[in-house]
Image 1 (cartoon, rainbow, N blue to C red):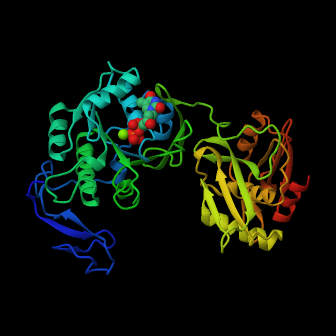
Image 2 (tube, helix red, strand yellow):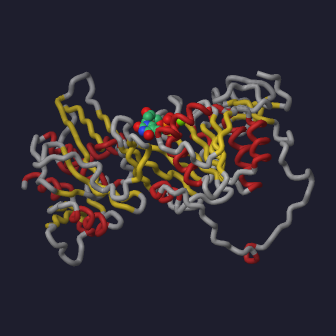
Image 3 (tube, rainbow, N blue to C red):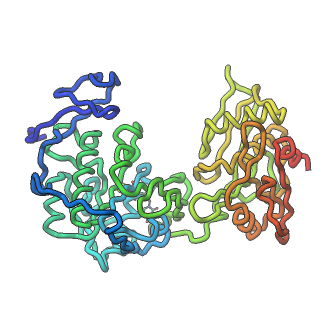
Length: 453
Ligand code: TYD
Ligand code: MG
């Protein structure tokens, strides 16, 4: 790589302390391995405002709040997670495992956007020919999108300056490097500096920039996490590469609701939005099976019915194992402790595995009660009543707490043919719901009765 032209320093990612050369330990806070190469703060960059120009101070009351103009991407589910579309000057990070569909989604969106807004797709990972192959597969060969195969930041910025696109896709940020730093492409220093410069450019020119970021094995280190605070919107792909469903979740969104979910199916011809996803994450058992419980989660604006499965088996190793896929493992340990103390069910001699079907990640505590009953159901090898729905948060004192928007969850389940629901008393609807019998509970011991029905 070329010799660095600009002055670089080493800054600590923990305390911000600086050192002129690399050291294993930060001289400021004593943390290990936290110094990364950065540009010295005084180094001017090409599109900085004139040094010393004074910025005007205004009163908040005198600033007119204008509704931001959204640019719809043409993909309804993508617009949903974005909060209605792209916002000029907005910077978006799309993260996810390799092969999950990031390039596919952005090529599809770019092709639709290109018709009305000049769109530049910068590819650092694949050649232009490879992108053309993907476009052929997606039947988008004639899409009005421009390509740039380039990995050097300065060249990309120059190209954006010359072509003046409204939308720029950077696929991926880990392949881009600036000559100003000696670190290798993909390192924390390069990823941060390149993203920061492109973000500044986006804000100054009102260009929408979409970064693709791979979640690397080291996740938190050189992965997209280091960019989360720089960008306006952080979207992550979830889902199992083995199933065809893909979820895109907004983790952070300055222009819309966080936690909103977009649901897609990966088909032969790219990603297709799934407008009515509530039944996707149920396995098709005709009768109830031991260890399975269905919860209605409400992450984002739509209720989603998800099957939670548990397997409780006599301990195999020296210590009992607890494993949670798609659910919080810490929360599982907590629930097992509450179950022991307040429900009198002891799992100390058992390995406990729980899984949310279909690669979904359930973040809200509304799933607590379903997890607990799935565990008891597997332990006792007794199925829960067929077509039953369970939701409720479990407290450390053994109480069952209400969840928000209970009515909506119940209504969605009724639509899908659920006939019984075990829910917190405070979520009990005032009027009976046709075809749904409600079992309302306040405490764990009452909830465990449900398994004896
Ligand atoms: P890709 O967008 O290249 O993933 P990423 O950019 O996140 O690494 O998508 C990769 C997978 O999607 C690949 O395994 C092939 C599959 N795929 C389809 O099933 N149908 C399609 O139409 C396309 C374009 C890809
Ligand atoms: Mg890709």
